[in-house]
Length: 408
Image (cartoon, rainbow, N blue to C red):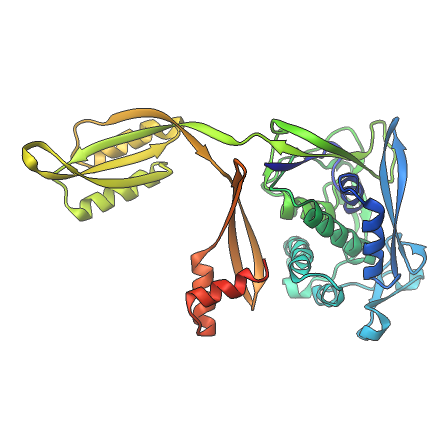
């Protein structure tokens, strides 16, 4: 299974993620040229070699109309003939703020596949929701500051394009080092992590430390939230490429993101089959018992028609579970069935790694379930989402599925 691992010991920022991922692709210079053509030369990415604490890696710089972006705002032009945007070069324009509508208009103007556009907008929606919570205002009233600058939009676009090119089956990341102290932003002096960043990282393992400064930006946090499938230690994997994305600041430790891409071992696990046979329960009682077994932690419950003593027809009820759920399921068997005995078999389950992705199609959110491993890759659209699209558009399930699959 192709796995991407992100070592976030020095946090995450859009430019550092871009730089690190560039080191994983075969033709980074061609990618930079292709990226720069998107913007009609209004935005230029420059890829450079950099060193931090003796480690050599890549850094990227974004230039807006020839000037390196340093946190100024921009004015969006509604004329597509002027190629998407104008940059405000002077400090008097630095307080111009960007809305989600502005960002969506910029992204929609880019000559990219619809799936990539959805990725970019989805990352910004994560930021918008976090800002909305931090400032207690509706998402529609959010006006971005630093994260609305063109270099931030360019960073998000670059990372989405690189993730599409690398196309990992699974993305794993370490806990996020967020830094400590305070950070200066458009709202004033804020604690690290800034409120919006903290909101985005809710539920994600993070930690501070002795390094003073903001190590994880809202843009970096949103990209992690969107792309990472699991946070934890590096899995057992055979690394094929390693990349280093360097930050702009210097600390006593190397200020970089380190990334690995390679093959992770296919997955198997020990499981338990707990079974019993009954011939004195109604269909309703058996159905109720199966629901309780699922609630107790079984990952699979099913029934089989069996022949029992004296030629009586009966039902075998079987539950599959992990060892930590075994005792709870045994108790549920005795509580909700008429059995006086349960059989146990320890066995091995070979499983494909799974992940879910979401995308917009015709105004509907469509979920797609992906499974991969053992040389196989499978996908299945969520039935409820396909059915809703079919009803809304008065088409059959099969036609709805065919329409949706055309964009995958």
